[in-house]
Length: 108
Image (cartoon, rainbow, N blue to C red):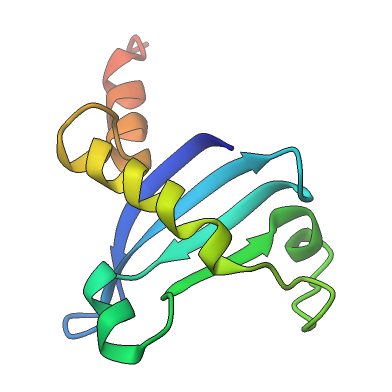
C-alpha cells in the first residue's frame, strides 16, 4: 500500500472526527478511499472503525454492498501509521499541500 493523500475531517461542530486517506493498493482495485475513525472507537464498539471504498467504483456511483465492499481491518493499521506520521509532522495533509501550492504560484 502507498499513501497518496491524507486529511482530517469532522462533520459539523459536534461530529465525530475522522481521517480520510487515498491509498494506492495494487492488490485490490487501485486507489482506495479510506475513512479511519479514532482508534478508541474500535474499543468502544468492539469493531474496527475503518471504512474503505474503491475510488474507481465510486466514480461509477457504485456503493453496492459486495461490489464496493472492502475489509477495513486490512487497512486500519496502515491508516494508523499514516495518521501517526501526519501528527508527527512527517507528512503534510491534503489541505496543507493545497495551501502551499497556492503560495508557490506566481501572481500575474
